[in-house]
Image 1 (cartoon, rainbow over the protein chains, first blue to last red):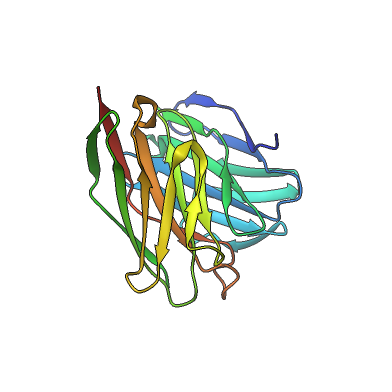
Image 2 (cartoon, each protein chain N blue to C red):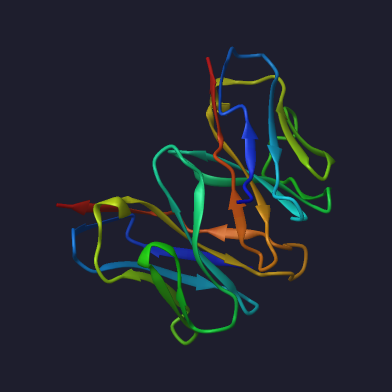
Length: 112
Length: 117
């Protein structure tokens, strides 16, 4: 049963620290999406890739967030420096043949 | 451009009653439509999808949705609610391969379904 995996599942860090979240998309999927979910803002698209190339990262604060796909099996989202307002659940999703997206379990980030 | 409106942020039903969650969409191209479910502390799970084949789509857990182009709607239904259906449900639309939005989904704000015994 193919699934998207994300690590870590939970992360607690202090303000100013670097945070790296990792995602392994489903093998064979060529699109990868990063979302952030909060109670106040709901589900927000941060960035997405097609064939490892960034297509759109307009939803991401550029000064502190960066997203990359070093290879087809790994996508990363980094926050440096982290701030309390970054506390949220971050989801990765990979795209199937009919444009459906399969979501990972998420990384719950708490910045104190 | 695509947009999705989910009517009702909260829906409450009794166990065994009909579930109806409403979704209306706007799309400049023939849409692909999806329903997702999110249980507490979990990721979004695909319930069903419409990809321009049959207008009545059956999904997992007894849910189905009907694509109505004339009404720009894609409402989700289940004949008999179960306690385990309590979750948040999201409707989403995709332009498919159109333009620079390749594969991008636009989500509704979500509807929280509560099921009473």
